[in-house]
Image (tube, rainbow, N blue to C red; front, top):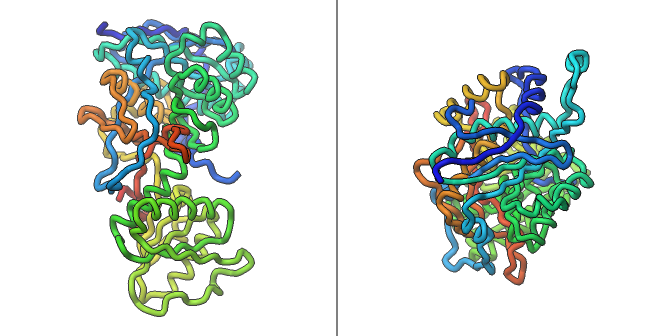
Length: 455
């Protein structure tokens, strides 16, 4: 068993790939992140088959279990959830059947030269192709691991009815691991199936925490909001243990959710910091906020807002207090904000990220050159995420070991932007709601380069 078995009809996907225009340096596709308000080298692959709607296609992914960030502070007495190894029956099999659900929309693919000239893929299909192509480039990593896997790729058309018809097919009952779908509505449909059939399922892009509950077979590859906020709290107690941290917010429900998690973590960890919350009425201009700080001591602040205008105005207000130094922590979306509004001489600004592309990473250089040579376009974020998920699943199946309290990545495995440390999100009675990728980067805003960099 020293090779991986594949089955997929490449012809259809190649038509789609060749009809995709080359990306400019500025074009990127951003995977679904936090749930806010509301080339193949010597690969042993034989062929790949994608069937319209009810289609099948093999795709194997076996990444491993990454390490937690350095200096992670672990509670002295962690509360363990009721644990049942979701991969127990998978590890016992000689051949693994993996199903991948993506909105490829084959029925929209042009079939004539005239159609190709005026054809362009919609956003879901572009993202699906990015993910699929990234997965293809990563497959050679599975060589030599002694894993036998059949990978089936299904076109779910981003339609709940189609997704339901796929999982209800008799052949689908043989599936051992599910990857996808990409979007939330189809994720809910398939998650229900995965829970009932006790089939491990990975959400590759969406990080929504409201897809399913009491489901120990559901995994989010991107960290959910709770993991982001927990990472902020860990960073605060690592740097400011016993100190005061101010929370400035507008009063929205989203912000209240952040505060709830922070207070819960603080209580869980013995109130290691003092949290002082200040709500600024939406009707106020932040430039009229009174001077809360009359001393010149450094101040630690969390601004749990997705509102660019509010964040910019509040930071602008703090700039007017040059005698203080501010350590300001925000949310993952801050990396997309106007960088001028984040520039300040009297403060350091931090945000979180579930994925961070290190361009100095040699693995990225290899992946990028292989991807561009094969598909004549730049890899998008979904392509890179697919690579990392394939690596994780390959390592997991090879090691046949799953640690529900954070997985350790082997030194021989190198991810491009996403690492994995799946931990259980638990209900009050100790049941596992789902497994959340707890690995979150802390990024610091570099005043010189005007970008967020790994801290």
